Structures are given as C-alpha cells and as structure tokens.
Image (spheres, rainbow, N blue to C red):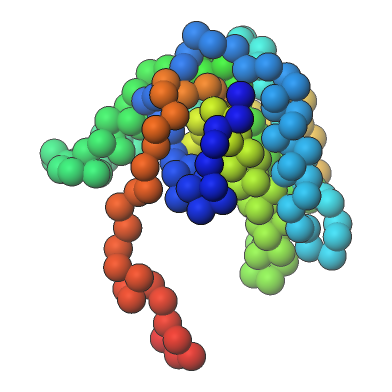
Length: 207
C-alpha cells in the first residue's frame, strides 16, 4: 500500500508513532526491503557506506530487547516527576504504552555503523552520525509512505553490549545508534506536529 502524500505532506506527517502501532498485523519482508533500498540512497561520509541495519522479527529476540528497553524506560518515566500536561502528557502516555508493548511490535530495526566512537574527536563522531542518521530517517520516511509507523528510540543503548550479544553484533567493531519499532499504523491520518516559532531556532549570519 502506498499513501497518496505529497513530499511536503510526507515530511510533515512522519510522526513518532507509539500508541497507534498495529501489534497484530505482520510486516512483509519485501516492504521492509523496499524501505531499506531507499535508505541506501542516503549520503554517507566519504562515500563509506559504513551503515548496517539489523532487522529483528524473531519474537524471543524482540522480547529480550524489550526487556533491556524497559530497564531504562521505566526509571526514566519515574524520574519525570509530577503530572504532565498537553503534548508532553500525550508523549509520556505513548512512552508508557510502548514500554508495555514493545516486545509485541512486529519489527525492531537497529541502525548501526561500522566502528566504535567512544572518546573520539567530535568531527569524527559527527561524521559517524551523519552517515547513519540520514539513512535511518530515509527508512522511516519510506515506511510512512507505505502505511508503516516508527519511532526513533535509544533507551536500549544503555545496555548496548547485551543487545549486541542477543543479536550477534560484533560490539567492538559496530556501534548501534537506535532501536526503531516498526509496524503498520492504525489509520494513516497523521498531522504535522506542534513546533516552536521558527524565529526561536533560526539564526541568520550569527547566533
């Protein structure tokens, strides 16, 4: 299924989806491969193409990753303190829902990049993220255009070595940068998100 979205609609309505993921509907491998082929078209630093994507559909491995994720997500939510309002309340409720069901999301996508970057100079780290984040975002845009929802999460990275052991990722050679739950969405009518005024984040010629 392809959604009838203009480029601007695709860019403005690809949301972080947590509560509206369809946990019952499987995601076809060929659809994921289409999204990954589009992700490959993103630029990489020095044309290194040093990206990797680990696609996790095995239920036991998703459950193990979900447990690592919750070990960080639950304390994070508890540290949030008192009641939240408005959009932050909705986001918090979405994180709680995902924490309860992340093992049930049919696909976990782990974008990775070759090498380890702890303690490396900032330009090298920036180059690393510049090589994987555009590809991962291209994947998420391609997924949205096919009726899939996703959300960029990083909680499991507090237990990256354990996740590497679960998935057979060579920890000393490969850096994980996210865990992206992927599923078809319940409905496709997503709207642009609320954002601060443009002049609060744009600086012309100087800060």
